[in-house]
Length: 113
Image (cartoon, rainbow, N blue to C red; front, side, top):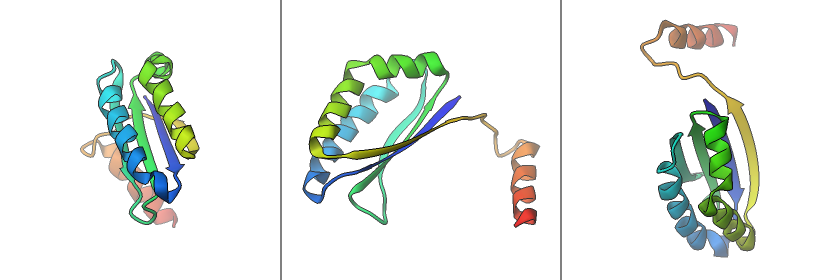
């Protein structure tokens, strides 16, 4: 699974338009094959910062997303608004909260702090 976390800071006057294009992007991206999760949110500490979390089944699904018309339209519109992206990509493995590995990881992190 591939996880992307992106932050977009927008000028205050662009916030409402960014909400519109982000809402449309969420709807279209979530309908794509291989999209496990796609959600734009607003940072509660900074109302002009949008936080995007994406989860994709594999690289092929992500590359198809990058080639989609709505992806290109979103980035063009966001750029016009002055949105400044900061992106991070991760390879991830899903671990259910009922899986012993989930709790062992949390306990080990807590004990090492």
